[in-house]
Image (cartoon, rainbow, N blue to C red; front, side, top):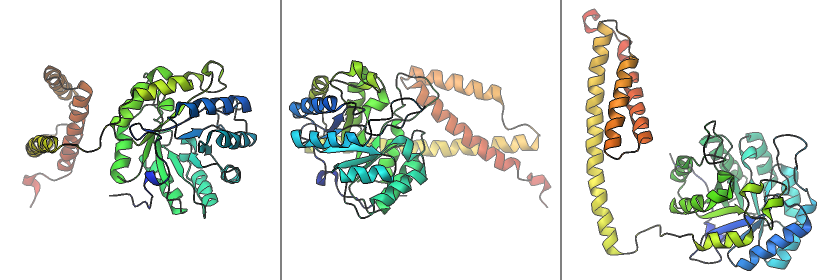
Length: 371
């Protein structure tokens, strides 16, 4: 099923400064003081690599008492920054009042944050406030890995008449500890892109990483995944930032980071490469057909096993047999240079389907009992 969004191409409202480099939206996590914001904006503009200036004006915080943003006065600082640098401005909005104040201050781009995307009531309030307005809006993925919430938020904003629309991939909360503040879960962004190929996706390495050292790696991977741009937090002096100090970079460090990014082509540029890829893809197609046929054969055998279990009152799940399969198959996969996690997930899917088929058979009467 495809997602039916009525959207304008990203190039009609946001373009990179340099066609050989990606779109980069940058600025401090929070607007703290007028001098901090203006100074950062000037340094970013001086790099000649920044598409738009971002700044947090209202900050949703987990606990009361934490810095929740400078508030509406920061919009005037953004306005001054735009006048002095020429950079378009972008802010997060979390309710109708934020939308109204941002529009009145001449903000160029709005985005809906991850904590807002998770709540359909909040998104609908923002959408209602946007009716009749022609302004670009970007929607971050929800905090939790729920594709439907992300899609629903995009649909609500689009239904309000917003056609300059993009998604922001900023990673997802996970109970598993890893090097990242928020797990990238690239497959979620891929699923969204599959549902709506024309939807631009901007990657937010700052919130995925939570650590400036990892930002170059995630930035390049996002571009390699055909994402259309990056949102990276930058502060004139991250060491004294009031929020998210570890994930912000200085304007000069950001400039250096952008220099080392490679923007790849979405399609092959030579006839020879097109032919080479076509031949390799034919081989993959043939192998895929063989794999599917073999899986079908495997399931037929699983059904026969289910019949024997049913007729002899044997339970479907036999843990020792499953442990044996996992051990042997993952060992073989490792020897063949296959990723162990991939192999385990593949086997789990096969096992789940075998269990499902055997469960259906368990609920059928044996042939001997059918009159």
